[in-house]
Image 1 (tube, rainbow, N blue to C red):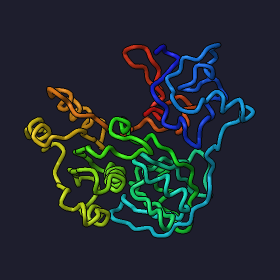
Image 2 (image 1 turned 135 degrees about the vertical axis):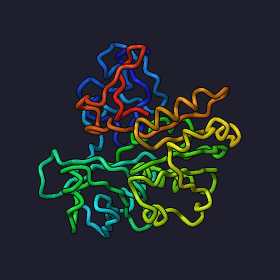
Image 3 (image 1 turned 120 degrees about the vertical axis):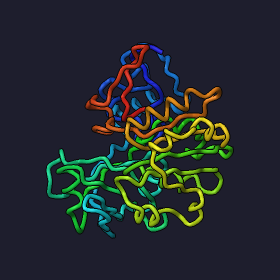
Image 4 (image 1 turned 90 degrees about the vertical axis):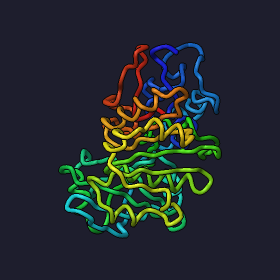
Length: 314
C-alpha cells in the first residue's frame, strides 16, 4: 500500500460515503478519487468511485447540524454532567454502535464551539442519546450551561480504534469474543456504549478507575445484568499487579483501553508482550478534530511513511 492510500475508512460503504474527501481528491480508499488512472483500492464493497460519479460528483448525505431538545440534565460533580437529548429513533440507532460520537454546540454560539462528545447510551425505542460531559474549558462549559436545547451533528464512528478486529456484519461483536475493558474518567461513556451493544452474547468484563468521575454516575448507568462484570480499581494498581497473568488466565480475545494516552500505551506494552497477544483496542484521544478528515489536523505518518487520518480510520 503506497503513501497515498490508507487503512480502512470508518465511513466507507455507509450512508455518508462518498464524503467530502472524495470531492477534494483525498479519498482514503479509492485510488481513482486520489487522482490515479487505475483502480488498486482494497475496498470490497460498492465502488466508491462509481457512486461518486453517478451522484454527479456530490457528497452523499453530508452530516448537518440539527436542534435537539434536552430531556434531562444531571450534575454529578462541579465539572461532571450527564445530558440526555431527543434526537429521533433513527439517529439514536446509529449512535448505538461502539465508538460513536457527536458534535455538540450551544445554539447561540459560533461554529467553533462545536465539541466532540462520546455517546454513553442510545435509547433506540424513545430516540434518546445520553452523554457524559466533563467541563474542561469554554466549549464544554457552554454546552453544560444549556437548559433547553443543543445543536447536534453526527453520527461519527471513529471514537474507538481497532473495533474491526472483533466485529463482523453490521458491526456486531463476534460471538466468541471475550473482552476485558479498562476505563478511566470520561472513557466510562464509550465503555457503557460498548457493553450495551455487546449484550449478553459477549463475555465482557469492565475495570473502572473511578478517579475523575464518581461512583454514583457509574452505578446509575450500569445495567443490573452486567453489574457482576464490573470492578472498581485504579488503573495504576492494575499496572502494578501481574496483569499479564490476568489476561492469559482470563482467555481474553481482546483488551480495550478507554483512558488517557499514558494508560493506553502502558496497557498496550503489556498486551503486546504476551506470547499470543489478544486484539488491542483503544479510544481515539485528541485526534477527533473536524470529524471529516478535511482539516488534516488528525493526520499522522506511520513507520512505512503511510499517512493516516485518525478521525476517519478504523
